[in-house]
Length: 210
View 1 (tube, rainbow, N blue to C red):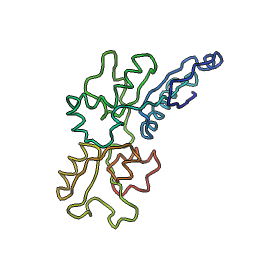
View 2 (tube, helix red, strand yellow):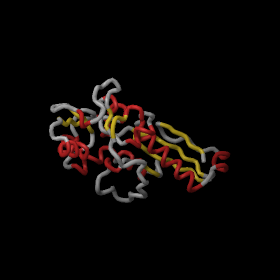
View 3 (cartoon, helix red, strand yellow):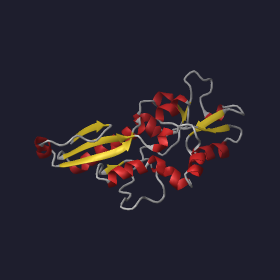
View 4 (cartoon, rainbow, N blue to C red):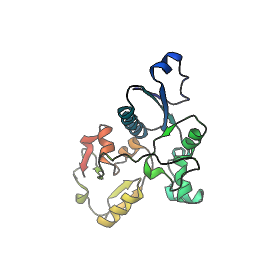
């Protein structure tokens, strides 16, 4: 299997390339480090299943949901007419390119997807999660080593509504803030993240609790 990554239209296949790789798939994802990690993982699994005859080009795209990194998701959802429509801000541009024939496969975070897919799109697979646990990330020079040690009023940030609800239920003395941004922005804000994601991004030494 061959694998390339581009941020524009995939290059035209030459006759020699087509002969070497009779099956070429253009896989689309968001233009972020986390999305690329996930896309490469799926590409590797496809390569294992299909074999060396498969060529995959990962094409990254900017999406509308990433343009506004400051507004809370609830506000974006309200402005776009509901949570399902709000969520499609992270997916509909990629799906439009797929329906136009520019992409053949998309890789999304399931949490970014609306409950109803556009016509002629289907959910092809949900791969096994590397680690279903949540993790706490703190500064390496912090005197606290776990969320249980944080004093009342401490602020914990997360981009996930599920994780914010979990914090409020289990640590009601803590303040919870919604934060937006990709993996590296989130790490700078010391958010709750998936350990599997952090492992793949080589940030494991910053994990302070699971």
